[in-house]
Image 1 (tube, rainbow, N blue to C red):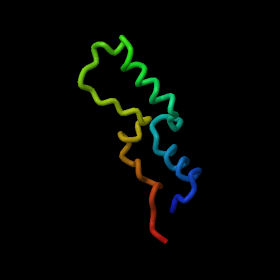
Image 2 (image 1 turned 180 degrees about the vertical axis):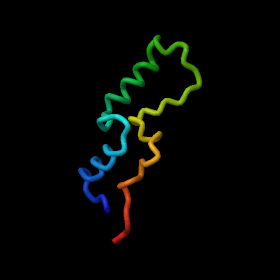
Image 3 (image 1 turned 90 degrees about the horizontal axis):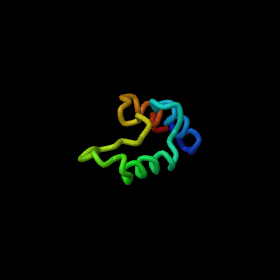
Image 4 (image 1 turned 45 degrees about the horizontal axis):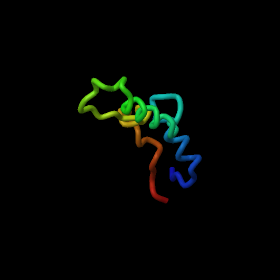
Length: 69
């Protein structure tokens, strides 16, 4: 399967997310706002993955690429 259209890519991406939706820019902004706030004052040396669980999902490439036609 070749994903030549953005809508096909988004559907394949959504199938492999651990959350029920694909993230929006506001999702990233919320993490940035938290890190810039006093609420994060005790957070040190941590990597935040704001990707809806995509990087934790082993099948993340399933359906994204296929045989070259």
